[in-house]
Length: 203
Image (cartoon, rainbow, N blue to C red):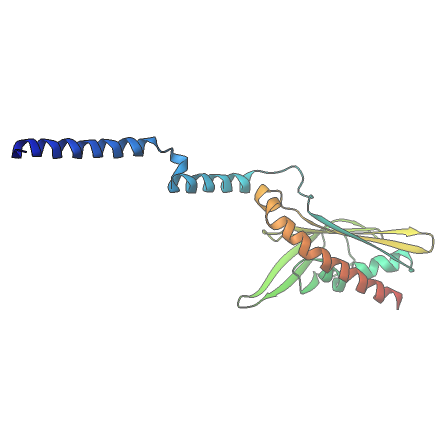
């Protein structure tokens, strides 16, 4: 083969390989590439965070306790700072802010000690209150937004106490990830706390 023909063959071969590569690159959809999948994931995550569901209470935890005590004594015990701290998720201590009778808009301050970080402090506000019957406390934690509801109802000579903890986060991402985990973890904790409250009230 002459030098000229050899050069022509090599040129044609190089051109063919280049065109084949270009066509192959154009033939791969963007969403199939690594960058495409990364972009889709980021967009989906952003939509999940911002999209609001209509049922932020879907991960509520509720437990009921029946004790042989009158309604007002049982309610007073269950709504003391000692037991509120036990009912609330990830709280070590709870104290009221200011003095005076318990009422709507009363503020509480919670404290949680985190290893290698220190104390995490959050403010909670009474958003609904009926003496001896109902207490609803809303937490300001931007991650969990816990809402604690304590209800008391007299039934003959016994009192029925119902404690509900709701994580008031209505993003799809929270509802599908942290929501189920928090529900599983805190359900047992709330049940144990109510058993301890029963023992305390029966003494």
